[in-house]
Image (cartoon, rainbow, N blue to C red; front, side):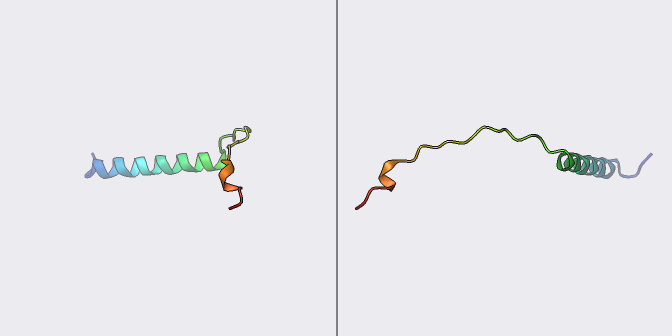
Length: 48
């Protein structure tokens, strides 16, 4: 039917990936509201 079915398949996958990226860009997932806490070592703040 088609001369290059592999090329058609690659083109279809690229279009599908582009549509997926557009959908994620238009409707981004919700960010988690948890705060990030990191303990800093005290040796950074000591005088020499």
